Image (cartoon, rainbow, N blue to C red; front, side, top):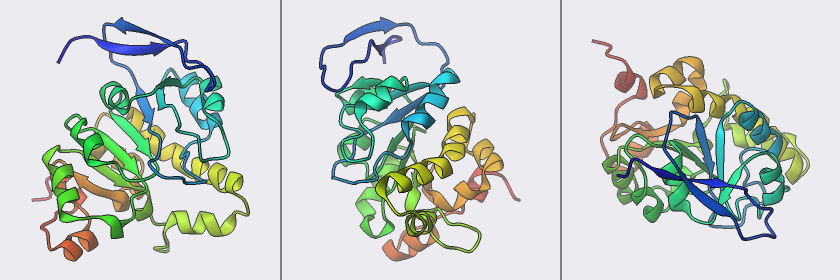
Length: 238
């Protein structure tokens, strides 16, 4: 791979399609990428523009794909105003960031673009998983985190609880963003998954795959695949 990569600059509002790209020698930067969903979800933003602004104010580079906000209460322009830098191509996001958020499932083509140990965070429902999908994730050694697997202390899916307690799409989006922000913040800053789990143990229930291994027992039993607990992968318990 080249020692240089593209940094997007002068990100336009959604109605303006012209932007400049320059080449910059990479330095160690905190990065986060927001991919557009494949299907229409009225609550597909994961993070609100205010949350993105908090990241960019902390010198975190936030990259987004045009169309990311098409189906949530905000617009691409709102995220651009918050400091996100936009591109049309998912390949740019895969190259520029080690953590990519996407509301629906990452496609096989998108996973093919992933770097080893990249973190992909989506709301993929476990019922949509297949053996081929899990094998592709593990072959690339992607850490796959699924929003739908996150549970509260009572064992209730967090997304379901938030949805029941909010009355509008905008309210759900804000509540979801408020819940996810500390988790995403930890993942952005953590030097490893083990460190992230120490900081935010609730992530343990949401990790589907890590380091080439399936970590979610119900999925393993459903698909008749081997698995290991994420704790045993991150720490030597012998």
